[in-house]
Length: 400
Image (cartoon, rainbow, N blue to C red; front, side, top):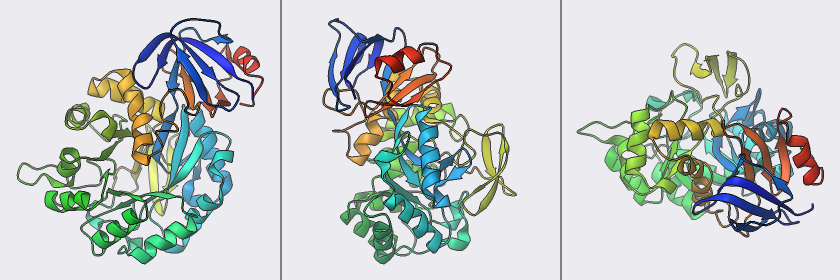
C-alpha cells in the first residue's frame, strides 16, 4: 500500500478538532502525521470530515446474517455491512440459546481471522446470553438460562481460542459472583445486564471487578427513589455504560442524565443491531425468539419487548449528539475512543493520533459515511459519492 496525505476542513483528532488539517497515512497503514500547518495533499476532501473509525462493542447481526449462524460467511457479511457505516472494529455478540449452539458460534469466532474480514475488523467475542435473570429476560429465551460457573467460562474461552473479551451476566443469580471473579482473573471484562440486581448487589459486583452496565436502563432494574437499582449503581459508580441512542430505547432526557452523571469516556454507544439491520420491516429471528420489525423497531412476538435494534453506529452518533445536547466530536468519541479504552486497545486504535492504525471514516456534512479505511485500506467507498473514483485512484486503487 502506498502512503497518502489527505486534506480536510475538519479532522476529529484525539485531543481537539483540527481545522484545515493534513493527515498522512504511511505505507504500513498507520497515521504518520497530523498537522494544521498546510502543505501538499495527495487528495483534498474539502468539507468531508475525517473521523476516527467507529467501534461497535455490541452487535448481533446485519443483513439477514447473525453471529449465532455459526458461519464464517455470516461474520463476513456483518463486517462488510458495518464498514458502510464507518465502523472499523466490532465484537461479535451472542444471544441465549442451547449451550452446544453457543459454543459452536464461539468456536467459529475463534477460528476466524478478524483481520481478514472484508470490512470492519472483528476484535473478539461478546457473550450476551445464558447467565441472566428471567425477570429482565428481554429477547432471551429463559429455557436456556444457566447458572454461571468458572467451568462454563473456561469452556467459552477455549471455544474462542482466547478471543472472549466481554461477558454479560446478572450478578444476583446463583454462582454469579464467583464466576465474575474467575472471568476477570482470566482477563475478561464483565458487564451487568438482564438483571434484577438491587443497588447494593450491583455495587458489590462492580467492586468485585464488574466494569459497567449492558444497554443501561434496558434489561435491568431501574431507578426508584427508594431503591436506585442496577441502573443507579452503574451510573453512579465508576465504569462503562452501554447506550442505545436510537430514539426508542432511551428518552432524550435520559441521554442528558447519562452524560451529566458519567465521564465522557465511560459512555459507549452501541448498536445492539440484529439480523434485520439494513433490511425491510418484517418477521425475523433473534436467537431462539421470533421478532417483528415495524418502522425499524424490533420487538418480540407476543410480549412486544424490545429485541435489539436495526440501528447503525453512525446514526447513533448523530442521535446522541442531538438528544444529549453534546458536541458531535464528543458523541463520535463515545463510539470510537471510549470503546477502545474499555477494551484496552486505545494505544492502537479508537482515535486519530500519530502512530495509531489508520482506522478512519470519511463523513460528509449531512452525516453520510462516504468511505471507511481499515488500517489504511479502503474497506468501503460509497458508489454514489462523486469524488469516490478520484480517491480510489489517489490511494492506488486499493479494493473497496
